[in-house]
Every structure is written in structure tokens, then in C-alpha cells.
Amino acid sequence: MAIIDFYDRGWGINPDGIAYIQGERAYSFSEVGELSCRIANRLLALGLPRQTKGAIWAGNDVTAWACTLGLWRANMTWIPVNARNSAQENHYILDAFDCELMFYHSAFEAVIAELRPTLPKVLHWICIDADAAGAPSLDSWIAGTASSRPDVDYDMDDMVMLSPTGGTTGMPKGVMNTHRSLQTFIAHFMLACPYGAGDPPVNLAAAPMTHTAGLLAVPCTAQGGTVVVVTKPDPALIFDAIAKHRVTEFFLPPTVIYKLLEIPGIEKIDMSSVRYLMYGAAPMSVEKLKKAIALWGPIMAGGYGQTEAPASISNLPPDHHFVDGALAPDGRLSSVGRPNPLIRVEMMNDANEILARGETGEICVRGDLVMKGYYKQPDKTAETIVDGWLHTGDVGHIDAEGYLHITDRKKDMIISGGFNVYPSEVEQVIWSHPAVQDCAVIGVPDEKWGEAVKAVIELNPGQTVTAEEIIDLCKNKLGSVMAPKTVDVIASLPRSTVGKVLKKELREQYWQNSDRKV
Image (cartoon, rainbow, N blue to C red; front, side, top):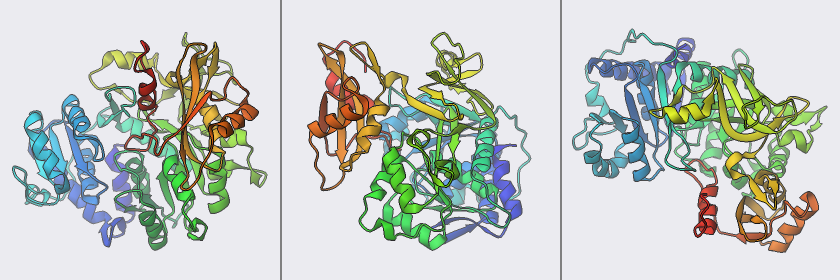
């Protein structure tokens, strides 16, 4: 199926039903479907070829999402632009990815006006909510355009999404996802989070729709369900939307979940409508996961994916957090679940040899979920996809029950005194301390050990902790080799716009006078 076929499936099931809600405004399937058709017909009338690249620069917004649907309906390529990125980073993405179309919200008119003269490849500018200087409004741009569905040919390997990588280790690369890879993601999600007949999902899009939250809107509407759109993952907005619209599913990164857990009176919030609170995109503290389950019940749903294998390499459904009615052991809870059924997952060594079950190696993935490659970077593609296997850069193993465990990123591993130290193992222990909200463990230069283990900690409001407490906790749980030698407490860890801790930024201050690259 083409990616737009999933929206049209929901449109056929529930044409007069509510597809999206934003604030007090409800949008029916027919309203958004017809708007996407008019956008697609206008794009095709311009004579633009398949896979023409268009970006949408806006926050979470239903009309902006309709522009994405319009691009897909015309078999063109969506470039997700995170409105929280710096102007410089988005400029790089738009230029390097050869963007030709720009839909943007008037809230970003000032930055668009500044960047526009330096983006000569962008030939068409459309302001989605108002007429602007040099850019028609969306309404005027599509005036007189037919709302019928265009007849468009597509190939399953046509690129429909060109996403920037996280950029945590350098300038972002462009990940080319196709109808095929996104279809596989949607199939994985619908298998992992099933709904019965007459029980359509109500999805809450609180995290940026330019990332996982946007993709998760697709299987929801494919089932005739409703997506409730909020502008940001603000606790008040989240809880108000859950109560008002009886939300059944939503995604949040661990860092946001940690903050929710510390809100005074959180135990009084009604989460009874929620069936799946999905977490991922970064390691999850087992202790905080237990706290969430104790607070909200069996709704936590873990998972693992990458931009290069969108959002669904493995899945840990709510019931897999339990064994015989009791909370599962930590060894299960620290996993990212079992590999999803439409792909193959193996561990490989540095010689690209498949390792035996239980052995630790690089997590490699094969199947229709895998990206087409990196845009205009065949050398990087060849390094990452070898003989059909996507090398994720993550190190892990699969246990005897088939659960996948991520030890760490290969680049984050610390070699201290000849011993391999995986930061995520140390972080799990530090997260268990009640004063700690979040932490990052990194390697820093050390004359004796080569690298020494350092913990950088962000505390819960009003809490204190000493370095000795953290070091002793880790020594008791892990031994002296893996315990931090030093501990820094800072006000806030540096994070990307989607909540990932930027360890590269942390390391830079300690390695700036070293010959080693961080």
C-alpha cells in the first residue's frame, strides 16, 4: 500500500467521523481528506515529478499535517522540519536535502524571511494560515482546485519521507524511507497495539509530529480513529486532553515521563482510558518504569527503532511487563521487547558474522522496514547497510526468551583500564536513586585508566545527593570498575529537540584538550 492509502482506509471506514482535534476545533475525515486532495492536485498541476521534496515548518498543527498528507497523495517526499531546531540546523537540512517546496506557519514568518534568500532551491513558498510577503496562503494557493482524489502511480520503493538523523555525532544525514518501509512500520504497530471492532483508538500527539508522534498518527487514522493534537508535551495539556477526549494511546520519551512522575498529586490523575503509553527513543529507567506501572497500571508499552528502521524494530507490549500476574523481573523490564515479526534481527561481530543467541554484538536488522539509504551519501549507505543488513550502531544481545537488550551505542562504550564499560548499565543503577531525575554516564580522560567513568546527574526538584552516595551505590551494584570515579550535578542535561541526552556535548568539555575525537 502507498502511505496515503492508510489515511484513505480510515476515511472509507468513518467518513463523517472525527479524524483530528486541535483545541476546540474538530476535523472530519472527509474535511481533511478533501483538503489533502486539493493540495495534491495543486502540486501535480505545477508539473512536479514524483518524489519532489517538500518541507513543512510548523509546530503540531492539523493543517500542517494535511500538507504532509497532500505531499504523500501526490507521491512526493515529506521532509520533517522540527520547529524547535535552530534556524541554522533547519537551513542545513533544507539545502542539503534539495527541498523545493515549503509550507510554513505564519508564527515562523520572521525566520523564514531571514532564510529565504539563502535557499534558492526552494521554488514554492506557501503560508498555511495567512497570506504573507511573497507567499500565498494555503487557501488562496489551492483555490479552485478539485477535491477529488488524483490518479497517481507509485512504486513501493519511492521515497516518501526524507528525515534528518539526530545529528548527535555531526551534521544530520538524510534517511530515505519509502512506502515499503513505512507500511512495515504501520503493520508492526497495528500488530503490537491491537484494537477490537467498534473500539477505535484515540491517539494523543503531544511529542513533535515531525518524529514518532506523527508516524503514530497514521495507524490510528487507518483504523478510523481520532488524533488529538496538542502543541507541546506540557503536563497540563496532556492530562486535560486525556480526560476530555478519553485518549487511549500516546507516545512520550522517557525524559518527559520522568517529569510527569514527579508532579505533586500525579496519583490523582485519571488515566483509566489509556491502553498504551508508549515509551522509547532513549533508554528507560527500570525503577521509573516500575513507578509508572504502579501508578497507572498495565499500560506501559516499550519499543525500539531508529530513523533508519522507523520506530518498530522491537516491541514490549503491556502484558509482557508481567509474568504470571506479577511484575516481570528487572531483566525483562530492561529489555526493549522481542523483535517485530516482519524483520530479522541478529547480533554481528566486527567481521559481519552472525553471533550465537545470547552473545553480545552489534544489533543488525534486515527486512522491509529498513530505509532505502542515506540521501546523496552512497558511502555512508554502504557503511551502514552491508549485504542487506542495517548496522544500527547499537550493541546488545537477545536472551533465552527472545527479548532484545541494548547494552549501549558502540560509540558511547568506555574503555577504562582495558575493561569495557557500557554507560547504560551504570545509568540504570543511578536512575534507581530517588533523588535522581535523569543522568548520563560518559568517559573522560584519565592518565591512569585511559578513560575514567563520570556520571553527570540532573536531580528531582528540591533533592540533594553527594558524589559519594552515587559512587557507593554503583560499587555495591556493579563493582568498582564500572562505578563512576567522579560525579557532577548540573541543573539540566543538554538534550536534543526530541528529548535525547546529547552525550557528545557533555564529553566535549572534558576532551577539548585531547587528541581524541568525541
